[in-house]
Amino acid sequence: MKAYTYVKPGLASFVDVDKPVIRKPTDAIVRIVKTTICGTDLHIIKGDVPACQSGTILGHEGIGIVEEVGEGVSNFKKGDKVLISCVCACGKCYYCKKGIYAHCEDEGGWIFGHLIDGMQAEYLRVPHADNTLYHTPEDLSDEALVMLSDILPTGYEIGVLKGKVEPGCSVAIIGSGPVGLAALLTAQFYSPAKLIMVDLDDNRLETALSFGATHKVNSSVPEKAIKEIYDLTDGRGVDVAIEAVGIPATFDFCQKIIGIDGTVANCGVHGKPVEFDLDKLWIRNINVTTGLVSTNTTPQLLKALESHKIEPEKLVTHYFKLSEIEKAYEVFGKAADHHAIKVIIENDISEF
Image (tube, rainbow, N blue to C red; front, side):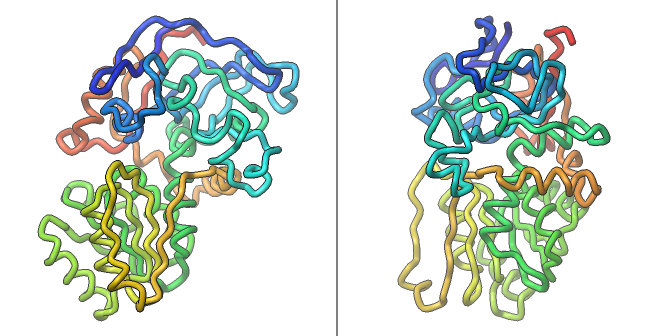
């Protein structure tokens, strides 16, 4: 089958590989219907994720059709259309019992496209299929479902829930990329008074306004942007600052705009250390949270999608075939130039 694989830092390749097979009774084999590219995939190709070995198929978001199930799988059968979570969960280990599926101890957590082969291929082996797959409601678009693999629960769990967004509060989201916009969509569940979107890209800021942001702030001049946010919050700073970029400058920005008793919720994937201004923050009762998504809110989010409370398909800006995946990476890798947010990649190779 065809698959997009990590080769070495700076290089990935669309190659022929063996089709996956059932290895454990709890496995399923899924034919990928649609997948996408995540910023984390770009980090891997750059060499920022050394745990990813050469030859690993990339990708951890997608939907598909069940091709085969192991004898231990009871909730799914051949022909079922499924949403594939970016996180695998055995459901039995110490962390799974605490609902922290991100750190499942038995071939679980974030392993797709990282520690095992991922979804940018014709077929995928899914460990712990009963816990990792979800049946898809008929009235939901493929695009909405793909967004539910990773970015929607990431923005919701690690940004909104850890940030303790609540009615009437002020929220600043730093970074109008896919995760930042997912946090914007799901923050509206809780009716904050102010949803301030912060970015360098005016086009993405305009998109954020159309998605429900109440204010936009261009951060190209950080000092000016910080003053603007304090002006919007009566000089107090924001109650919640969601970091959705993953670089030292944006984390520092969050530290400078957070108000007393506020929460900095870090969603970004950081590749370098950041400075933590504890000497200034300790007296301000600040909370700082981090996390890797566990996708334990996926059932809730599916219901929210079914009731049309949110429309994550609006995040999709570009479409490609699997045979065009190298072009898709070119566009997503220069997202600002192409006004790209999320790309959808459709399997045009396997017969359905």
